[in-house]
Amino acid sequence: MTGGQVRLAGVGKVFMAGQPPAPLRALGPLDLELRPGEFFAVVGPSGCGKSTLLELIAGLSVATEGAIEFEGAAIGGEPPDGIGVVFQDDASLPWLDVASNVAFGLRRTSLSRDERERRVRNVLRMVGLADFASAYPAQLSGGMRQRVCIARTLVMQPRLILLDEPFGALDQQTRLLMGDELLRLWRETGATVFLITHALDEATMLADRIGVMSARPGRLVDVVETRWPRERDSRIVERAEFGAITARLWKTLREESLKTLGQAGAGAV
Amino acid sequence: MRKVVVYRVVVVAGIVAVLEVLCLTGVIDKITMQAPHLIVRDLWRMLASGRMNAAIAKTLNNTLAALLLALGVGIVAGALIHRFRGLRDTLDPLFATYYAVPVFAFYPFFIVVFGLGDTPQILIGFMLGVVAVIVNTLNGLDRVPPVLLKTARIMRLSPTDAALRVTLPAAAPHIVTGVKLAVAYAFIGVIGSEFILSRGGIGYEISFAYTNFENATMYPLILLILIASIAINALLSRWEARLLARRGLR
Image (cartoon, rainbow over all chains, first blue to last red; front, side, top):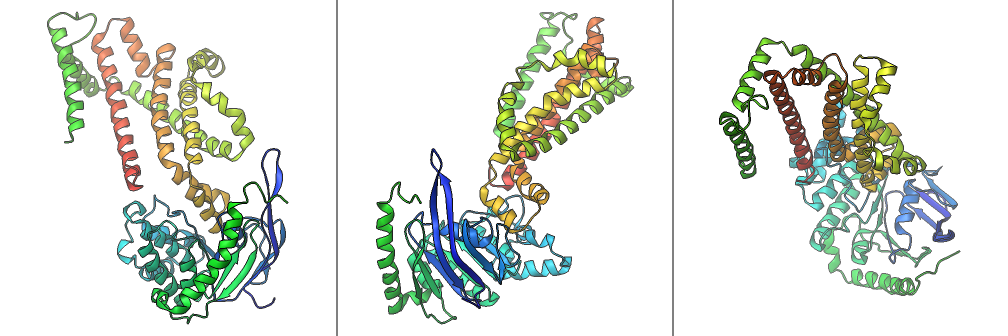
């Protein structure tokens, strides 16, 4: 397993839960390698540890076993430089206008003021919010606020972008369009993208590879290569392979989801 | 003008008109109260003559000192208490019962320790205001969305930066409520202390005038306090409304 931008080897997470507290395995052990510049999506049943996995890679949480590396350096509970995260919940800062939201992370960099402003302008244009630079998040729709968060991540020029169900709160049409935008941004930035999603069609449409997670404790039970061309958009849903890939994902996921439904109270180490 | 503002003006004007009539017809005698128009006239004369400037300045300075102290200590203490669960669990019951303690009971003690200067009055104003600021800061910090805290970590902000740039601004609407209460409490604390034992300030002047049946001084000063409180509160409410509107909360 060499050459991966992100490498997870035997990664697991065990929480203490219940009364009296008892160890509860939430994730793993799990091995995974992300290739530089690829779009990797993860699907899995509810509560299987998808978000836990993302938080471990982001350095927001510490694995209780195994090792995680980003560009060869170990990640250990502190977010490393070069990683950006877009969360499902609205993370725009309501007291700042759009431009200030996007520029938020740039203040701690050594970039000149001109360079910071140039980057903000470029990213706002990229996400289609150039005309809303002075608007406040409360004046924007949910989709636009999510684009503010994406812009705030992109402006830092991360080499790895982690997305935790970023379109989960949006309607189906907006999700498809946001998916197109995400694909365009992915191509333009060249960053590696790691997407957590519930939606099989979204994963199939966007990703180069899709990891299917088992019921808790989440492990990768299948990794599907879509083999889509890099130049693609939401019209890919019309292809016959799209249905075949989604069906394959569902076949695996259905079994795991059924396990989740019958799992109440199980999962103790 | 909005309807509610019109109603407010009508209610106040109605009360003033009733008082005016009661005073002019002798139902309320002159020893008890001046007619409202005379109160306004005397306030104008008092302010124009400048004879109360020292007292007004003393009260405002002490109130401002008590307020700034309550805000500074209250916000920092609130942030620290929020950070340490054990400390929070220990202090929460004390905060809940704090306003059952008559803070003015400490005034003689403060005079013994700090003398008859401004310090005891500032301390009383501070003591009344600080817990309101702490409690509202805690309320605000409790309601900061976890996703914003994660964002601060992803942006690799230092704990101080995260507090100043994310958590405190996110908690601002609640902190503003604390500021409003602290302003009111600082006024009450300082003016109340001046009533009890002091050598100056608006409270002292009102008390002195009351003792000497000087209604022409007492009522204008009471009116002055009313105007100042309402004006400051209105300004803070405007600020709060702007803050909430910007966040889509009003």
